[in-house]
Amino acid sequence: MITGVQDVYYEVQDMKRAIAFYRDLLNLPVTEESDDWSAMNVGGVRVGLDSTEGKPTPKRAILTLKTTDLRADVKRLRDKGVKFVGEIGDYPWGSVVTFEDSEGNFLKLMQPPK
Image (spheres, rainbow, N blue to C red):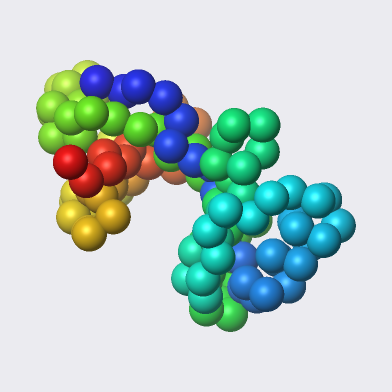
């Protein structure tokens, strides 16, 4: 069951430059910071920065929805014709899968580890 927003994130080429912008110019509190992933708390919503390791970015934001049962939600959405991009990835920090909305925008479903 989808329970809320996990995060919204931007892909960034230069993490240090991006952190400086969001922290120093926008005064957003950084809650996580690494070379690969950083995040800020913006009014209770986690806004993330995902490194592309210097590769150009498509300049888009991705909405990640939090779920309590990723596999059940994937089945339910697939049965309704939702197009998934790739398979479910399982990581120490949780499981995630990418899908498209009706307009071809990417969204993700993420289930934190239990």
